[in-house]
Image (cartoon, helix red, strand yellow):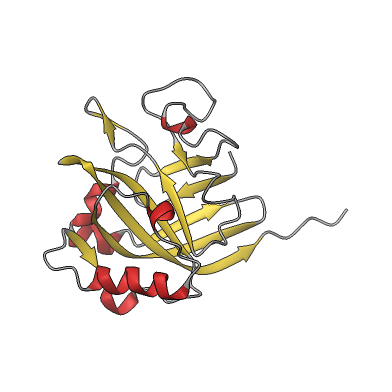
Length: 187
């Protein structure tokens, strides 16, 4: 466990984990390391470190397993405009800081691995990805075109299965708005 993810007003209030070598370990294990088909919320060490300072940080979690809600069971609800508007704040707590993100998009995406297929550190790639998102006709979900990030912004993406087609992903994306560093106590 290296962080905690909270989306106020939802049931998403979960530890965030990362295994140093097995990229899918927490896809099949819970936060304690016990084998579990329900998994946990996790990032992949091959693509993100634990600092939340990459142009794109992706956290994964299951939606449902055998009709049982999992860590990201509520993410698909972001396709509803009212739900989207009422749950735009994401908080990530680490020992060093509290990161506040503002949701700008929630939509169905193909099953490509975002970080393997796009070099978001390249400003041109970053811009092209979000420009194409804004221009996608008939997109299922909500995208605030006037709030899309620009190169230099830090984006947090939550990724889960799309409820009606498990071969697609449902992504909720937010941009970092504020970092509140934790003050060390004087000795």
